Length: 155
Image (tube, rainbow, N blue to C red; front, side, top):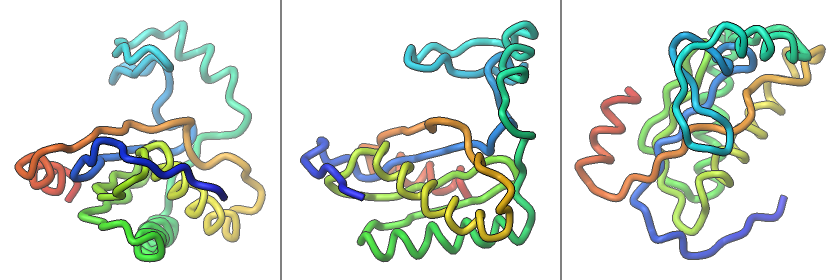
């Protein structure tokens, strides 16, 4: 996999969150972000029904074994890439990571983490092709206080 490296304004870290496939969808009552617009939307049962109808597989949640595998994969990949992993919390339906990955956009970071976690999960769930929702929440952290706050939030 080729990675585009360049100066991205040198954030101190990123807070990245991604969800498991089918566990938080457009139209969800908890709110959701409209793809490509950055617009936060409220619950909408019609949109939720359409999103459920478009699903290609059943929703996926992580077992305890899956959660350990995903966490360990994140730790290993960050070590290999030389990224500083400040915190990682793998829940049953989503993952939070606070990571410093100088020279890489957050899209590259979450894309690689999700890809490597998928490879591991496929060994235990070979019948599945989808484990994660598209995209992720990617927040740039530019101040020391905010890094600490993100770590506390994730832990």
